Image 1 (cartoon, rainbow, N blue to C red):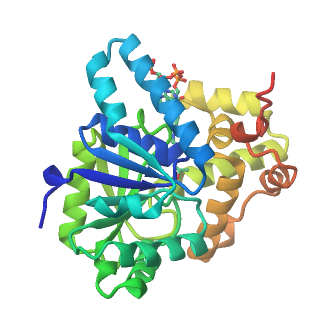
Image 2 (image 1 turned 120 degrees about the vertical axis):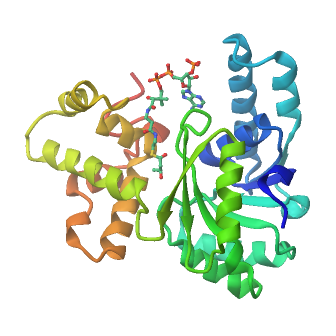
Length: 294
Ligand code: 3HC
């Protein structure tokens, strides 16, 4: 089996915030990246952000201009699925919908016949075992090479990769994923395949509780955020962070926790749900808990 050192090309499915970040750190670690998305506009946006962030890294003296240029040249942007065919590792970072992941992993298993190609997913909440079963239905044995490779936003800055082993994932695939995360400059930590893994099982109820505290009039968002940043040394308070993650994503993850852990204490706070219903999704819509148009 090839090792993490021999990975030459990573295909990243989905050029959103997470996928774009993953492609970027692959490229800065010396690995070719194929950035695939169904929408050209998403690819254009990812490319512009890559150029901006690399220019900033050079300006700040964190990177030589030549290295930044080489990294940018290592990224290919495409809307053509077949262009991913040469990759020897896949990280899926598409929209967080179980039906979409099913479709993608059936197709990935059919496209990547070589059993050494790992099919990783950046899902933040969907069961890795379930995604593995989707791959298995596309090609017998493919479930063994499906694994969770959960990055954190902003990907170039956050050190953690949560590595989640599904029921069918092999030890070899797990070890190679850990090794690859290290090669990409990250600190991997393992978690088992239970709803929310570790990160979101601990983080999301805290965010949800902050909405309850606000709803019950315990305090206002600015004060709750200040209490958590100043008292707990969190870089962002729970509301700023919720806006950054996306309030719709927070509700979605709470739903997964409530369902997967079969416990109503994980139900999303009504106030959080109301903001989503009103279209206030956070930074991405310009308004969530806070107003970013100002
Ligand atoms: N991409 C790349 N780099 C970025 C960035 C981005 N989107 N945003 C900020 N940075 C870099 C900046 O360039 C800057 O680096 P420099 O000073 O060397 O140029 C550095 O990060 C610090 O940025 P700022 O000075 O602008 O701002 P802050 O000091 O406030 O840091 C932050 C910003 C890194 C986002 C910090 O607030 C933070 O760590 N916040 C918490 C983020 C967090 O918890 N993320 C996890 C979310 S949960 C998740 O992703 C899982 C999912 O399943 C829900």
